[in-house]
Length: 362
Image (cartoon, rainbow, N blue to C red; front, side, top):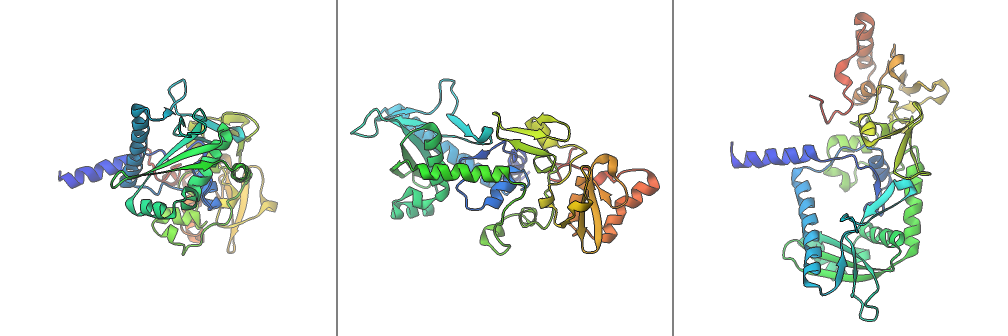
């Protein structure tokens, strides 16, 4: 095997092992202006857009950030506490645990006029081009709104008034640092935004298909984002029968069909009675023809149903079947295929009952 082939395979495995299903909405992403993307990610609708190389790059950034903390700790120029009393990253959450994050730690002996004041520590890394942009701007918050909202969310929930922001140039290890004062208005806006997204049954408007930010994404990612097809993964997060519960702790998702709380594994696996959230289906929702077990839609002149397992009949389809049919814009001729198999062989079209098309279970 050629050396290039070896590392291509390593990158493939790294990508396969990447856990795309984050259990919460993070402080690290709430500052993103694209609320549609945040909602779709929270409901596990978007396939990962990162290959092995990019995941290795992210990991390199994490290692650089850990290295900065180690240097601060070993030199003892300032005091640093990177982990809590249990040896874990400092973590906090809001909205029943659905909105949360973990920070790089806390520092003191930073301010000459207040040596014992505790500051949030936030460490980032950047490539040479981005780093030079930051140095020229000399404004961490203006450099990245996402990073700005992240640190104010941490300051708000941990109750500190300042942040020591550190950015390392990946190319030459040059360091930029800045002390930033807490702005409670940003924390209030972040909580309101997170609450609105969590409570919504539909994604908001987002980028149009010509936006440059979509050009480097996979075709599946783009089509799902733009609402042209159903998500690759059939799971509890995008089922109409489940909902995030913000009135209790532990980032609880509850299935109202079966009256039970769902573990993360439950949510990933879904079940045969999954029904797509109507806002995700690229067809006209017909609520007057829908029931608890069967959701009606119309595409062109064709009326069809997304149904639970016991309701499979003519023009009624399971969620995995509907996902496959959405790829062909619900072509009427293709929609006859599953019905023909069921009626003549008393069987199911097993090939389309894979719950996650990106992860074939064999």
